[in-house]
Image (cartoon, rainbow, N blue to C red; front, side, top):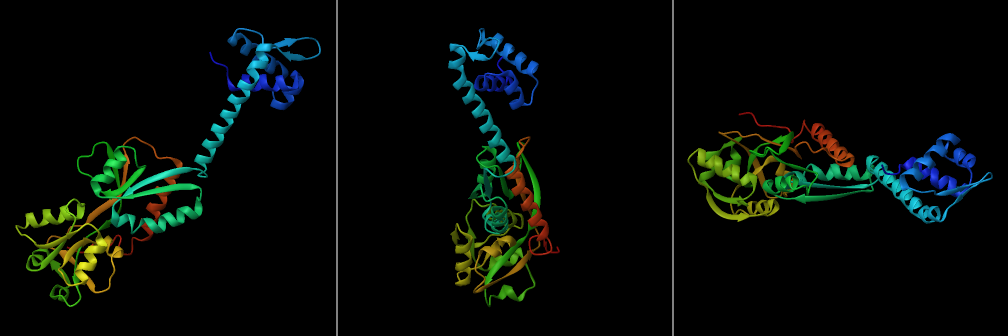
Length: 308
């Protein structure tokens, strides 16, 4: 059996006061309890730590050698408890989030600003990456949680939907597609197209839809950044398809958008967790704020799904 914290506390209190009565008052424990703790400690270490006489308790040489060790152990214990309390009270900690660019630049900034006002000492790190990378960062424990589309066949991850969006076609002002209230996917085949990166979840969905309807796009150019796609469209180089949540990330100058239908494909986005891996107190607080922000924006474009 190893010495307990209570035994170490009793040893230090008696060593510093040379008195059972003073140690008893200091620790708010009875003198018999202090005496038993000392004897049990001495029994465990295999020798006397105090020389006892009628007037006081004096450290033996072994006791003097052990005193700084006991003080350090108690100090480490207190520091560990203080750190733990600070973590649970969200006065200390670090959170890493992996998120799709549509959420990293859309929903997250306002939530993070609010979180920083409430918990200024919590450090935040954000990775704005593609869906596969979001899942990988969460899976490899390099992110506390992720914000992404629902992964397929990921038995080690849990997904909690919080928002939904839909596909829109963005066009330069004056484009003939803007004369329509809603644009069928087949209509895209008749116009030059600016594509987002092929590895993005949005582009993969576009390619799936075109394959399902037996069509193809007149691909003129590809870009990796949403803002770049928006500027290319505004410059008249072609049209493009983006998730509705992405509209807040591109400049509206020189372009407009319409909802895509036939098919109409709402997309769920949410929080990715490692299965059976509880979040820290700080990460849980940020998660809760994200959920609340999503609910509060429900009447707006975040939750607005087009009618089929």
